[in-house]
Length: 483
Image (cartoon, rainbow, N blue to C red; front, top):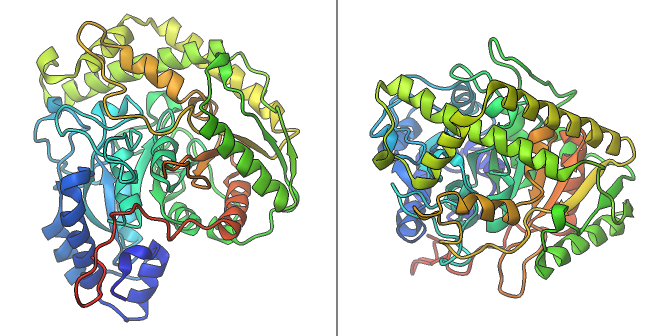
């Protein structure tokens, strides 16, 4: 029972449910690990330890995760009485006055928030190196990125601070850090989780809320606790049955198409190719039909340009939205060079430019739907290379969008499922010779997380990763207690 951090969230909640431990013991253990590891990782930027202890001392209810420690990403979701900065100096010391609907559901599930995890400014890049808080470091190699924009969340889960942590994904921001940090990350179908009351959608429907987790079943159970429309939602989706029931369900014999060729000729690192081939072999060993060189027939260049328009417009919206809420104008000294340049680009986009971009992404969605008429799952790399060194996405004043160009080559696959709304997941099935995790990307039909959870449950059982932690994640006291 002293080794809480090796347990997933469901197992931690079960200890509390059986009264083998008290919630405060679990919370204190998580805080102790965070205080030991966070100085070197910088995964948590707004600690909420005392309020977490206070919550643990009260009745925690009977939700599926009653008493389990959790982190919120420092982006979008609001927690009444807690700071929110979106990784930017522009928000100053803003404190939320009400909960987002997602936070209300997380609280009803019994989760206790320990703090906010680090993110890049406004979630723009696939790394976490905001000027305001400094970089989060990958627990597998401190000189490397944890991925982004949910890199603080993924680093904390990989290091065992918490078993799962909130994340969101507008272009790969759940799946990219899950790949870099060796944890499980699923982006749900568009509209699956609520965005209210502050937002109807984000970036025109590109973004989805969920989490990074240590186990597949935690991801499924958490999605059960949070999914469904909130009041006035512009689009929503309900599952046919609980996602947790899918994890152990037989998926049948699936048709799994895979590719090791990136769009537009982006070169793939041999380790990323090896990871996909290993995952394809694992699927074949489980009895699935695996077909090579399979990809939807889309115009990758056109959909990439459309996504870039939506991303720039989304950045401009983010700044304008907060300028209106805060009652102050943005200035270059309060924003990073890339953010300033991107929001300027967004302001130059016309309404027609934006709607044409939406149309192009919808055209791609139709082609992807045709592809899934022949295949149940599409397997690709998550990334074109292993986690790069911190600083790889720097954007200097003389070339402020350099980081974005680097990002497009780093993550050439993930943005498509944001454009089309498909569910997709990164699975930690492969580590390279440097002991760096290399995730593999599985996409499913629109609304069909069930098939992904069934396949993920199979792969997790056949190739478990739960006890694989970074080498320095553990230290024992003389008593033998893991801290």
